[in-house]
Image 1: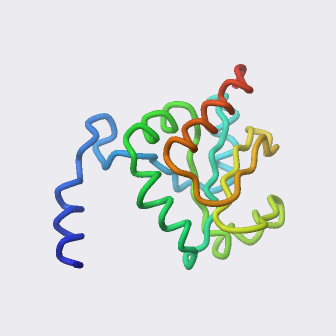
Image 2: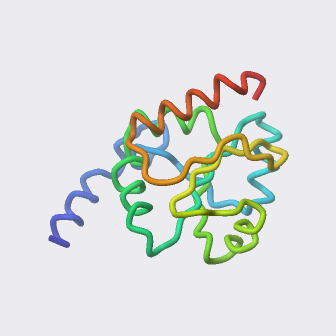
Length: 142
């Protein structure tokens, strides 16, 4: 099974000519402060995947939703995407600023750090796209 996964992953690389990487949401690895600054500078909303490494639904989101081409195309264009393990690094401090009820929690946050929407739990690709489009529609100036 591991070999099958390695072969599949090797074949999946480079599928997206625009990013040079795999299709789906491209998450930034910047600090939270840098993410806020970038969101302000680009006038975009932040999409924050607040997850924990042990969380089953979080792993399913990563595997089945964030990797979808349609989801990635939309989110990469419209949002600053970041995923943070809320139990490591900057995560514990952020979880005090943005309280969690469960994992995964998906936040849409403006460049000032204000939560525009909080979504708890696994979302199917079409559900996440619908939510993302509703956020974009409700924040036309961002």
